[in-house]
Length: 166
Ligand SMILES: [Zn+2]
Image 1 (cartoon, rainbow, N blue to C red):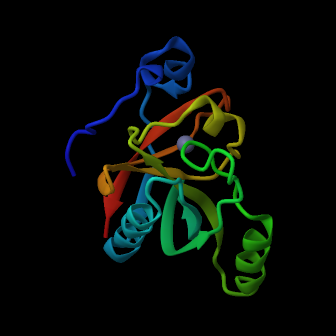
Image 2 (cartoon, rainbow, N blue to C red):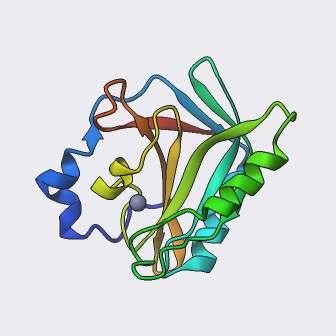
């Protein structure tokens, strides 16, 4: 994990800066090393396109506890380099398989090819309250950074959540 090599100018624009609430969330994002590695490998394999997937686990004490990750197709072919649209059929399949398991879908991850692991205005538009949104930055095909985000209490911006690798 190094400092992102790429930060397109738009990430320092007022529009992009407004997406981030500087106050850090008190919550934690607990993820097994194997799940984190899987997200990094998926992001590298998908480069230069964005990949996306679902986080499965539970939420307790205001923290996310991840047990499994499931890559889901990115339906956005047109702008696959900088947008993602999670396949609803993939969502339903994972959701159905979880019934009765005590686990649920608790977030959505995606990659940012040659961009920092910071959310964009588009990410904010599609974010759900209560979900965790980790982003893996892929620079020239290699995972360079991993940060997790969730909506602030007013749902007006993303707050950074501490990532704890288990
Ligand atoms: Zn994004």
